[in-house]
Length: 311
Image 1 (tube, rainbow, N blue to C red):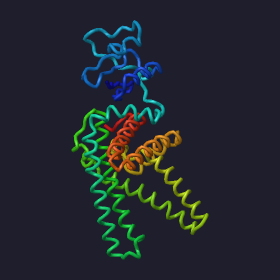
Image 2 (image 1 turned 45 degrees about the vertical axis):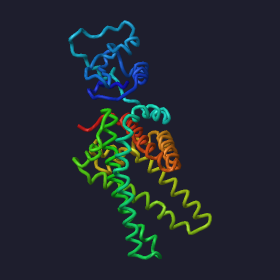
Image 3 (image 1 turned 180 degrees about the horizontal axis):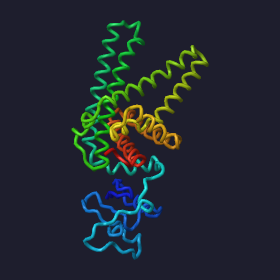
Image 4 (image 1 turned 135 degrees about the horizontal axis):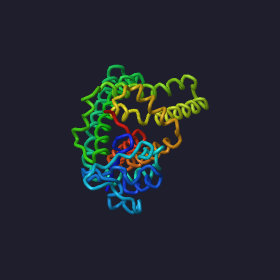
């Protein structure tokens, strides 16, 4: 059973498991009068009035019957976690919530991933035909440009769907296109910006590494810089979709947040990456489960780190 909490700022947070609620009470982030409800009920009640949590408050009395439950004061209400939880623990929390929605989640992934692969394949084939096989490397330029645009659209669709699924516990396939109601150019520009930077890194470092040991060092340096920036920008797409931020502001907001504890966020991305690689190794079929699962978990993490959504 999942639960939602109203914070001292009046915003709603969640969903959270019962164990998470108990830990927040133990840490002083939630109290007896904190307004809460279960995912299956529309009624907001003081936390102490919910039978599963009443024992946490001893003899604390709930407010008078019929009265509206008071919001906790700003200095005593629930506060969002200061940092991310353990990556494995996050996946353990995500799996039972994600499992009932596997069908729609896989459908959304295929809905965006298949066109991306087809379009990039066609553009690459046409580029090779026009430029000739001797210029295969040059032919990758238009293919890369198209992939940047397509990936921006793909991630916009993913996060439009999973943000609603995580917050509301349900989402339809059509919700993946909700980003079109806003400014769809921002996720596209974000896809172009991140893709161009990631592609420029090995090209730039390659100018100084013509072969042998220097090439090896240059390759390692390029990989390191790409990983560093990839982790820094891990929240950029959900920020664009959820908070309607411009692509550059989203990249900066993500980077500023991640840099407070870059190593810990790197572990998240490493665990998610290893899981997806294992899914690809499993005849690609496993990736149809691991990719949406890790995006779901990453969306949960985003909501914990950035709890306030756009109005």
